[in-house]
Length: 520
Image (cartoon, rainbow, N blue to C red):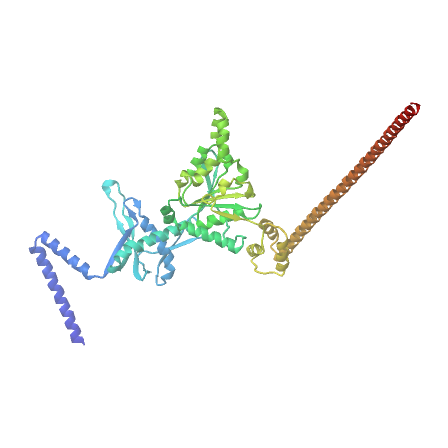
């Protein structure tokens, strides 16, 4: 065993010495051009013999940051938990000190598998000295990610894996970015503040079926960029929220924003002077945003376009100029589904109203308000969600009574939430809710009873009035009949006198004739 080992060492040493001698002779005897060609050929041969390819992604390109590097950093941070063999990690925090960001430390390696292909990542750092001729200072650190893989996966790495990483990092960034709500303060300017509303679809007091239909519609919308482009329509979606006050319309808007990670633009139409100002405001919105117009039936008088044209044709030039300066239904609709609707992408439009029947039909048709969502009174399912939100319970002995009362009375989710927030004691809060629902039931019963009595009194008055009218009519008919009888008697009496007079005349004539005959 030992002689063989010694022989192997001796052979290796001899070979190394021979190679060094050949290299020395080549450097002395061969021209530099030949040496370079020989070196290139050897490198090419070595490249063909190896199975591994490597892609280098540096932190900067010149003076600009490399977006692919940032995408790789964000993506690998989500994969670190799956690589438990890593011995060194880097931990940092951003603006939110409570949230820690875990990343790779220089020199560490981690493996990632994509569609059956393995990719090995390594974070590499190197120092580069500055250029004194260009005012450069001392050395600076260059960081880069290197990914190695089998050469047969080269096309997959460039055309599928790296684009997948960039898309995943974009989704992570969109999901984690801070949201803002914008308001229009002066003319055509937006003013932003941070949106910290905690409402989500999990905490939203709404029946599960209705909630799920909204979530499915939103998820389908954000995935259909190519579809909207193919059919030639603007990438937008309109929702109409209608129902009584206190039914959760604002909470639903916040839940949609948190689900999509979209900013909100809260448009106050009464603060807009003209259609041109409205156009500048709406064009100034960013992509991936939600335009909200609350209580659209109350904020401004929006007339139908036919009425606008008719009024302008009848008015003077001065009145026409004033009309043009006002916000009109036409101006709003031009942004909702006209040419200006294509000024941005991935937009959600939300109108709210307490009275859907008051809205112009032109606002309600599909293509403008695609989904009409009724926000109704509190249901038993919505109550259970609220109870779980405020008191972290799934059941209580008062549930059967509360749910039975909710089926009988009209109570908004806001009223239920307000009662549940009054006390941290679950028993106290739920018993207070029972009392509220009983009071509402009593009031509803009294109102119903009062309405019934009023209806009965109305019917009685109508019957009484009808009887009185019938009696008066009967008396009038009797008086008329008596009058007719009296008048008829006089006529009969007069007729008898005339007959009697005629009879006497005839008798006198006959008597005279007899007398004349007798005397003759």
